[in-house]
Length: 116
Image (cartoon, rainbow, N blue to C red; front, side):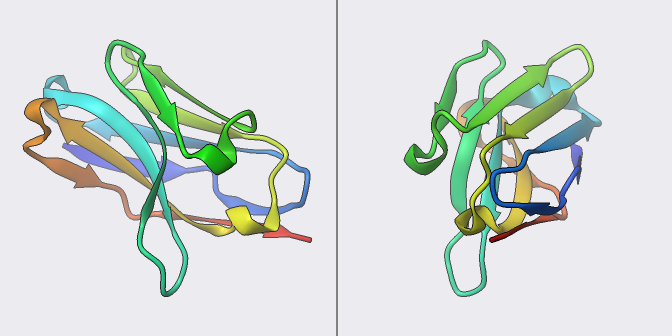
């Protein structure tokens, strides 16, 4: 499985960005897809995740501002980020997890910078 992110960039506080993650290869093996983020010196944290059935979960600090969605037919996942804050600045990584959580696949990351 190969995953590729797109859509990062620089935005002012209060603005919006939409991230996309396209999966290819043995996508039938994927159950959960998610977005993680990481800043220098900190551990990577789960921002939002969505399963094949559509169940979602979010980091508390992004609830009500970020929306994760998934188009199973296109093997693509999205993260709509609204009301962005400077503390959302990070490298955002797409993750695809196989059924049974046996394998994790990661994208190369995309930088999101929110200026104050």
